[in-house]
Image 1 (tube, rainbow over the protein chains, first blue to last red):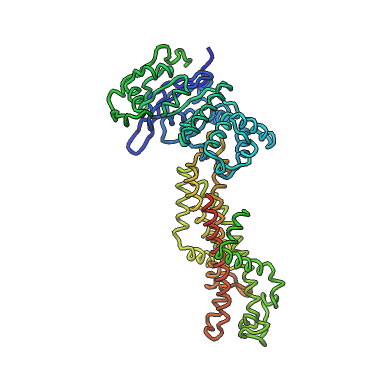
Image 2: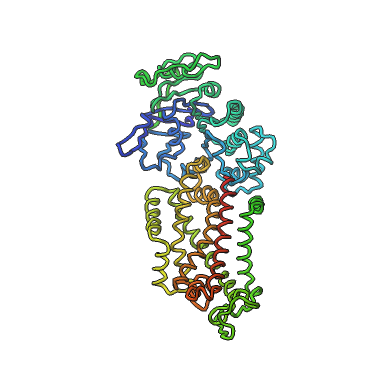
Length: 297
Length: 277
């Protein structure tokens, strides 16, 4: 059996503050197989985004953060890799897409310059002409009709949807094995969001990229993900294949989350309990979709 | 760049500023050709024509040893501008680099650098420059050192605050995620976004540096005679007011023109570049 692209075991995170240690993650475990699209769903502050940041190694340098647990990326234990090698993985083997594409692009450089910067991560010494040629191909992949014009533009001259496509093209330009999408396109309107998500799904299928999809938008998750982890206050509440989890939500929190989505057919804003003891019920695993055993220690 | 210039030329106030700055810079550059008595910039004595009211060929009158005031004012511009440019060329890179380091790295670096900056800011600028000039010999070079020492903390504060807010922008995180080095993030990602504010402040400051340098020489701590300097010219002439009014009024007006011009341009730049963001 080949190692999964990403394997997280009992990940704990706390922040040391003036009032002692504040625990954010209480031991979460998840895995993403090669080419699999996995969603991590939960409300704001449930620990979705910090999980992504730990995987990328952005929180490890923070003095106040206390992190324990194990993260294997392509079979290698990240915590044992030296900082230099972890840095080398970012932007080449793993990359990320954010909520607001426009602010993720530096307003003082053209798209071409930023593409060059990204491509140089995997191929140092790549010249501008070659970078431009590859960028044109990458932009064509995300259905941008006039790649030359877009390459000479600045981010503020392009629409949000266009910037999102540029971000997707950049994130996949170095053929990463893991793409982390942190609420991609939440800042865009829904039609544009749907288009770019469709594009992203086709592209990751084509390249066989694994995706960790972080979202609170259940409709999007249902269309995009193969498997879902529901996270509540730093604990995984329920995990299983997307269809089964939506058809048959077994954990009280998952049920509340699903009933909280306003229907397009009306019926008012659903009422759900703010914080119920039942939300802390133990993890529910759908049959056959637990965590893989026998991880080499 | 071209667009910025076009906007500046349309607005009457900024146009006036550009014209004044143009006059100051051009006259300083062409001093050897436009002044009637270039030798009067140095130690020349002509007692036959001393203390004359404005009349041809002395359009601004002569000083107490018979030197043409107009000539001396134009040469004083040259020295003021050199001083202003050198001071900013030294103070801005130092201030900007410290501000970037403190703002982006945070932690102990931020604490040490910003407290050091606060120490410099806590001393009134003129007092700091005066005490330095008191210890050092009053020469043009030392004047530049003294003004530079009081000037860089303002750029540190400016860039520190800009860097702190730019650091939260998505593109900084995006750069960190693709594995960019900290130096790259500071100087290639954050700094270019601070440039409009820095340039605007530099334009405004050129006027202030001239004013501070004039204040120092007014107090006898700046450029020494016979080198022409606007501040010391005003100081020397003040004893003979109101009879020999031209001795103070023309150098005073010259300071006004330069400072006013740079301020108008700086204000206009702030509006234009600020609106672009």
